[in-house]
Image 1: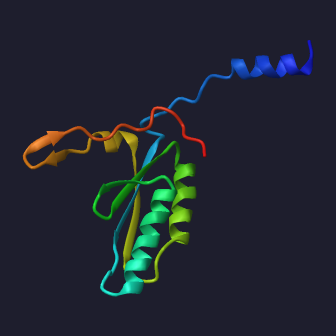
Image 2: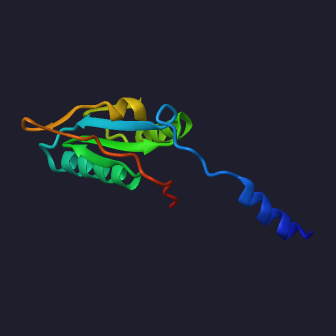
Length: 125
């Protein structure tokens, strides 16, 4: 058997990664940034755009979240958020397990809604 055939067989034998609701994490970035002056609005926009580039999704005004497959992946994203912090304002970064996220209660007025599902597959950029 050639090395190419062996490599092909070994790749087929590896099961796909299983997403665990206890291992998977939702990373939240919540912020209050000043927007009174032009340079403050520019910093707010830069930070918001950077969160979107990092793969975060807007959950509410100034609350963004992203699903991470593990605590290690969450740590990498935290570092990227810290690198993008503006000079003024308050930013909070917190992570919760997918299980905790799934038990979140969401309301639109008095109507209840289901929380967002984690992505069905891994996204590679």
